Image (cartoon, rainbow, N blue to C red; front, side, top):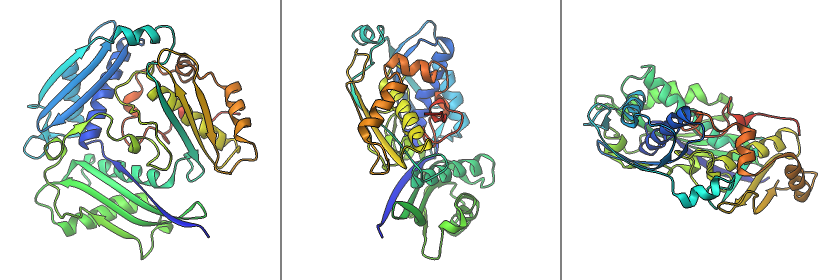
Length: 369
């Protein structure tokens, strides 16, 4: 028997890094709603009650970035600069320029917007073809936000993190070894009440009973206090949660972040396409798990390399699967954008609780292969 433990984490939409991802993606969607051919590469940095937005945007028209950002911060729930941030009083610095003509030269002819390597992954752990640990971590983080926004636990604040350790036997999830939840809260709640409420309203609401036993360890706010949070407790930056965004560390990562980038950036669009391909290879019973790597050069249309690993779970060779993929899919940047219809304002829906494993996103669609 091959037994091992694997851990993945997720964060709530109020986590400082996710706040930045959300701001960057809502700006992207704002410009794509205005101009489907907009070129956007936006980074956000938050610290204390100050937000800095910088990057490059080329589009036919302008949007009110400051108004959009304040509305988004309000929606997340930040309204107190003494404990985290206040959407009404925060300072917003904006430094936006046009896209570099050197980059545009390659993108305008259908080439990749940058060089780089990207990975896609899928497995049969869950019905959404995602690794079990990251799937549960996302569901806990999403539930943590739901009980706050629905005032089921009205003493919670926006910042939070979850972490799940899963015990595997022969690559099959058997039980959950550890659950860790850290959540920002108002000062008037006790540690005992917090743990009781989180256990009942978050953990038990998400995790199947058969996956928890008397040996499962549950930790809630291990330091005993989490009142100061958000950008007041820690700085945030776009693109710092790339493992949360993908497969929770269960698959390799090429290093490129997603948020704030239009689909001409293959960091984003090609990674989405590889998830689509890997998921469909598993869903069509070619294998039980699949990892795909691809590489691009800036300004060039065709990928430089394609690699597939099925970890010994396929009856076909990796070479045969690579040929199948090449025959079935156009992996040029333009081909990917057209196939997945990526010139739409759909990116804010991707920002929180993972870019993969969600319904109603084009790269999650199952097709016949």
